[in-house]
Image (cartoon, rainbow, N blue to C red; front, side, top):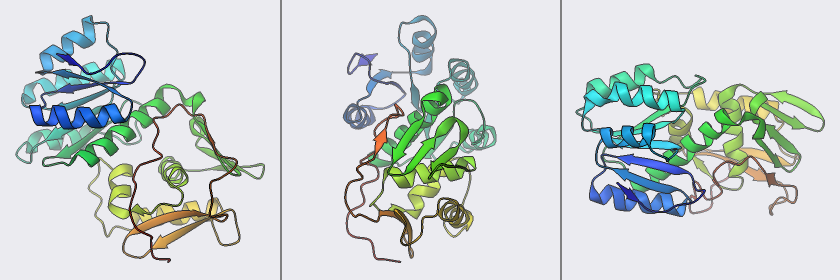
Length: 273
């Protein structure tokens, strides 16, 4: 076992990673303010999780022993620890099991996955999102964020604007929060689909994202002449723009979520819709 850091940082258990993955992903985690704890195999992690003093906020696992999967999932469910599984394309039965077991709207810790090869940036995005979602699950009363005149209340999936409570569906709330947190940046279509529907086979041409965006635009009045305007960038994605085109004076994010202000940091100016 290898500890990269100590303290109050979120702890991510890394199981089954090779030296290259441990070094690269561990560096990403440190930059996020997380502590990575590496284990050679599932048995070592299970012993540490059940008998050790460590509390883990996420399990990042490259699973070589598929027989350990039921035990890992049961243990993480009991400890309320989300799982990010990195698998290879030949592990078809395991991936099919993950797809059938993962329920995006469930009340338990989530299971996300990626298929090798996977780049370091995607690993970081998936880890950030898993930590944020689990924080909402464990501490819903603390989920509150203010962006200009919009306050997000996570435990009720409500946005308060001009004294009115606007109730959103779970994925609408998630998407709206992503857009506001990344205001002024283009969010690529593939990244949004992968973040909001990680356990579903949603194709890029699917209209499910467009419908979700349309509902958010309508419910939150993200039109011209308002404080925020939600733009569609043809063939690429969506961008929420602040009408003042400068930092929002009333922005307060006291949710306790991992900082996502630099995610994703797409370069270049987006073409206007």
